[in-house]
Amino acid sequence: MSWMNEYPRPQLRRESFLCLNGQWMLDDQAIQVPFPPQSRLSGFRGEVRYMLTYVKLFKLPAGFLPKGWRLRLHFGAVDQIADVFFNGRPAAHHEGGYLPFWADVTDWVKQGENEIVVSVMDALDHDYPYGKQCKKRGGMWYTPVSGIWQTVWMEAVPPVCVESLRITPDMTGITMQIVSGCESAQVIIPGVTETRVPCGQPVRIDVPQPHLWTVDDPYLYSLRIIAGEDCVESYFALRTVEVSGNRIMLNGEPVFLNGVLDQGYFQEGIFLPEDPDEFAHDVRRMKELGFNMLRKHIKVEPEAFYHACDRLGMLVLQDMVNSGPYSFLLDTALPTIGIKRRPLIPAGKKRAQVFRDHSLATQEHLYNHPCIVGYTIFNEGWGQHDTEALYRLLKENDATRFYDAASGWFTPKETDVDSVHVYFRNKRLKPGVRPMLLSECGGYARSIAGHLFQPDAKYGYGKTDTEQALTDKIIRMYERMVIPAIPAGLCGVVYTQLSDVEDEINGLYTYDRQVCKVEANRLCAFMKNVKI
Image 1: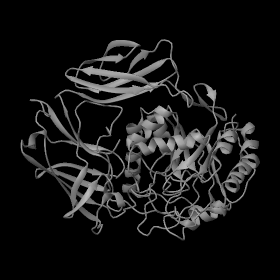
Image 2: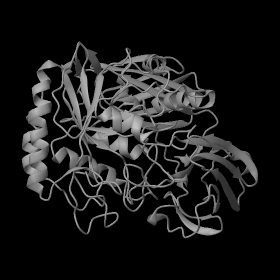
Image 3: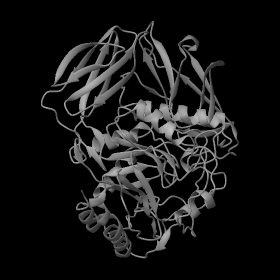
Image 4: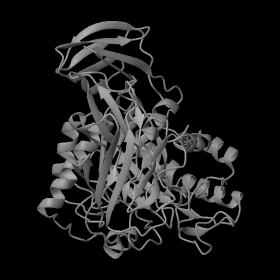
């Protein structure tokens, strides 16, 4: 598989697909899209300015656009502010950097050569989501990305088509809402049922002899929808997520979320692996170490990641992407040692609106993925504002997940979980009436010569020199801090982290994913027994 033939929207798939990845021109120099220009895989050799201009010339294949149908141009993500021109006409404007958008370009397409121009402005404006990007990378801050960093593609759709699906599962069926200009649509669940349903309103569909989705048995149902001339394929799973007392419940049973922090960074492509199958490899690597959850840390991935988690059985705690100012002293150093007295800084009107809109759009974009069991709204006070109002808003928009309103500290009264970060020591945890998440911990460093981003990379906590020593530290942390707190209400743990990232050498794998730094079989055997 490659980014040239990976279908970018697995939950609303059509046969019509024209990938426009590959060679583009960026500021008059060649670049390989979808890799960001700062990455080695992009092949870009020019200066990455804060204003970028992409150009792509292409011809539409014969017969690709049937008479009377519409042509849509899609972008997976462009960081931060993008203006798209198609054959000289303004086609789309998008702000944010992490979510998809599209434009209808039917009226401007030519039989011969067509031109797409994407004008991008990325000054790392902190009014917008930016995650771990920093102009001066180092330590816990990483190389920034700019411009196009997800798939660019086109599809032909009939004039009246399926615009979106919203699938809400439980343990006996689904509630589905189809947004389409058609009055009704044919819904086919192969081997289960076939029925016609009205569009534009929620419709209940029961599934006889339901097969539930779990991490050990991630069963997915195929789904086909026919609305007029349009035919789309999707999938769903039957599962529920609830908070009951001080427990998180999956399918009505208490579950222990045994996870790792997943930054979603890759050595050669920064925000993207060379091959989309690498997302699935990461999932398998963590399952082979005994983990059942990934905390996707302040980044929204291409859907290939979530699809891999859906089909392989990996739970996901999805972070919203932070904006706003950050202070190492006030947001990390002092709270880490227990001094948490910083008053939260109100967000300006623009930043507050952007964060609200981006968070709601993230929920809508990812709603149908069964792997996602929870959302983190704020992390360690970075840009934290209006916490309880945002918790209520997001919970109302999607009540099928739990919410960690403030991961680490500055915990509000309204949140589904108490969330703590503990590094440097194995602290005694004291769960209360709500479920507790140890949402960051560990981060033990181990340097592997020949697999470092730079020779003097050393960011991490503590030092280990062998697989046994690192495994010993992790198991000791669990035995002293994690396992004793489970009976009292500890419902999950997030170990830092899946892989090394640039200067950070605290991964379970090296940055290039070539070396597992722990005793895999021993760690997996231990983790399999960490449960409620």
